[in-house]
Every structure is written in structure tokens, then in C-alpha cells.
View 1: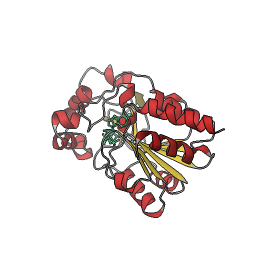
View 2 (view 1 turned 30 degrees about the horizontal axis):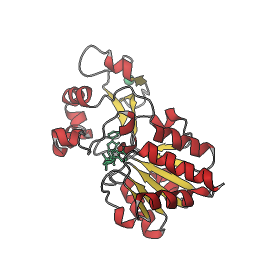
View 3 (view 1 turned 45 degrees about the vertical axis):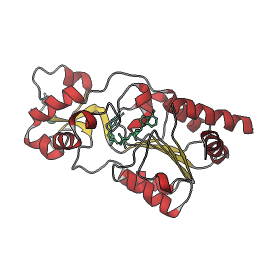
Length: 253
Ligand code: NAD
Ligand code: ZN
């Protein structure tokens, strides 16, 4: 299937308001200016996957919060950017009833800022920090962490270490059941910008495709589920590809 046919097929599948669910990964945010992990400029390439996993790991965080925060402050604070055209298109499709929900591995909040209402984040949010003392419940923003004098930020209320509200290696994902049910109940599942190598979200997509055939993948480069997709689109620019799909949906009316 060439690109033209792929765009037409995706538009046809989406055109009847139905129950389309979109799963997104770091690749949807690269056009907004946030690098992915596994792309050519991602930290996995720069530092090595083992090194990254060693540090952004819940056990490492507990054992040595100072090493964790030194790394976090250097490599993990995302640039302040605006949502990309792809984020905006998904929000617009939701308003028009063409997308029911977005299940995302991203922690950048860009879907919400683009106006998507039904967003299910499974890896948390990078701009929120939580006190680690059970029952304290204090929540902090990025500015608080940036402005703390030392490397490790502590809760002013109880003195405990505070932790980014993101899922580290070794922790369970957020919204597991809701994400799984949302994916499994889709009549059309569209994956955008994920290599589908991070579990369990990748597992949900695999489970979906073992039962239903309506899987679309829009991703630069290979994913682990390309062979299972009804349509695989490898776009030069995802924002433009979604706009092209939208033009075709509109033209059918
Ligand atoms: P990934 O890094 O495994 O895969 C991203 C995929 O997107 C790659 O296959 C890449 O080729 C593709 N891609 C890059 N630019 C693209 C574009 N413009 N259009 C389409 N595809 C493009 O990402 P992942 O599977 O989401 O896993 C990475 C993990 O790291 C996630 O768990 C996530 O929580 C975290 N992460 C989040 C952010 C973010 O919030 N923006 C950024 C980096 C990493
Ligand atoms: Zn506290």
C-alpha cells in the first residue's frame, strides 16, 4: 500500500463517527520539540538504554535520590513547548466525535493542553511532583523543584523526599484497567508515534490485534506490531499526515 492509499484507507475507516481510540507515544511530541527516547537524538542513543534504566528506576530513586535528581535535572526536564498540529488535530477530532479517547504513554501533558478531554495517561505527568510520605499528600510543580536550593527537593511540610509523578522502571502503570478496557473496546485503534516496545501498553495493542483487525499504525520507522496492522503509515510529518486524513474525511461528506 503506498502513502496515498494508506491515507485514503485511514480516512475511510475514521469517517463514520464510531469508536476510534488513539494510542500515542513519544513520537507524537517530537514535532512539538520534545525528543523521543529511542529516536536518533533520544537519550537512549546518547547514554545507552542500560544507563537510563539504571537511573530512572524506583529502586535507584529510593537508594540514591541525589544521583536520580542530578540525572533528572540534566536530562529529563522537557523544554517548554506548545502542542503540535498532530495534538491539535486529535483534540479537534474528539470534539467532532471522530475520536473517543487518547491513551498515552507521554508525560508532557500536551494532549490535555491541546484540548483533548478524554485522555488516559498511563505514565503520569512530568510537571507534577508528590511527597513520598504516606498520608502527607502535598503536590508540587516544576518551579518548586527548579527553585529548591539543593539537588534533592524535600517537602516543606514533612521533610520527606518528593518524587516526580511519573512511572519509573519497576513501578506499575497508572490507569491500567481503564487503559486496557478503552483499547479493547475500540472499533478502530490508531497508534501514533510509539515503537510499541514499552509494556504493558504495547501488550494491550497486541491483545487488541489478536482479536480484531482494525489496527492502524502511524509511526516513523518500524514498530513491533507493523505486521499486525491493517494499515501502516510511515509519515514524513505526522501533523501533515493527520491534516491530509482530515481533508479526505471532510471531502467524503
Ligand atoms: P519510543 O521512544 O519507544 O518510540 C517513539 C517512536 O516514535 C519511534 O519509533 C520513533 O521513530 C517515532 N517517531 C519519532 N518522531 C515521530 C514523528 N514525528 N511522527 C511519528 N513517529 C515518530 O516512545 P514510546 O513507545 O512512547 O516509549 C518511550 C517512553 O518514554 C514512554 O514510556 C514515555 O513515557 C517516555 N517518554 C515520554 C516523552 C513525552 O512525554 N513526550 C518523551 C520521551 C519519552
Ligand atoms: Zn510531605
